[in-house]
Amino acid sequence: MELIVVANGKTGGWEARWGERLMRAAMGPAGPASAKREGDGTSPSGRFPFRYLMYRPDRLRPVPTGLAQRPLSPADGWCDDPADVLYNRPVRLPYPARHERLWRDDEVYDLIVVLGHNDDPVIPGAGSAVFLHVARPDFSPTSGCIVLSREDLLAVLASAGPGDHLSVLPG
Image (cartoon, rainbow, N blue to C red):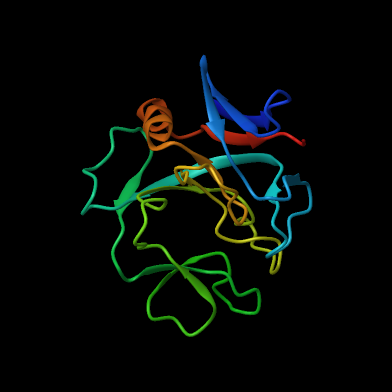
């Protein structure tokens, strides 16, 4: 299946469709871009496969889904330093290069779908840590990820499997 994210002309925000389910979504404050760059505030436009799911085992049980999944730990991070050999790859913390902690105090990374963005091959500076994850309660913009409510993300995951993908259409 395909999770399609498009601009909502009525609200000025973003919406996503998974089959017949229509959902509120959010992304980077600068909207979608065909040429994403690290730190530019955009979300990449295009088609990105669902790679696998990571989840917080202290807050959730394994999620019913056809995607491969693994529990997060406090030592999980993601390298966002374009000069590092592990740029746009998972890392174990502590890690010497710039990185993002995946074990967060808030709930936005309780569910993380790793997307096939800038990963085959990795191009330094073309964007890192672009995930599908849980939105903040106010659906505020992300640094470039695509977000849904926890309920909607769980509904997507319930019928997601290998070969499914996310498509972000230009605004």
